[in-house]
Image (tube, rainbow, N blue to C red; front, side, top):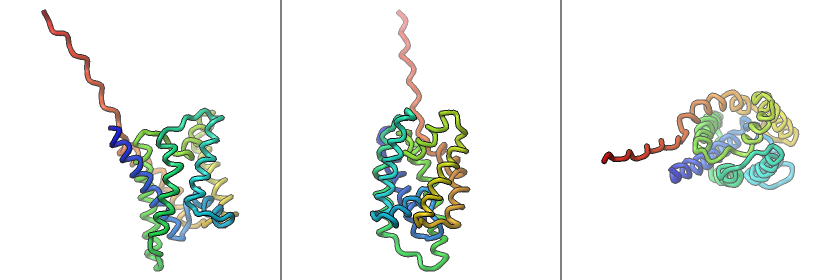
Length: 203
């Protein structure tokens, strides 16, 4: 089970990085957090992947007052998503025709939904941004209000910094929830049922 969990976790993180790269390369609008990461990269230098790692580490520090406990998946998310995003951005061909840009965007959203199901379904800890959302919601706030508030904040800050906001931002926002709703339970690794204790033999 551990091997399967690890394969699913790191495969999911690699796919998540691919989804980010496809959406950024499409130029049709990033998901809210990557509007922010791209804006930071444009304004202050470093790569988008580097800012994904830095922002993830800062967000994970915000878990401390919320008494959230990171898992292997949380730490791995902080490190590997940014690395994979930069790797795929370096190797993906530039989508020149409009049809190719739309193909990148649609693929990005589908890959992102599947990747979310993979790494959350592995059961090794949520990503830092998901943990911040659930930690705030556990303090008595609506999870929908918390998520909306966080994403409006980061997309606004990213747009002001020069990040790309567009139709892709809106499509991601309205589709990632339903996709995650399908893929997370489908890819959840459930623990094996406990074996019944051996029955005592009669004498």
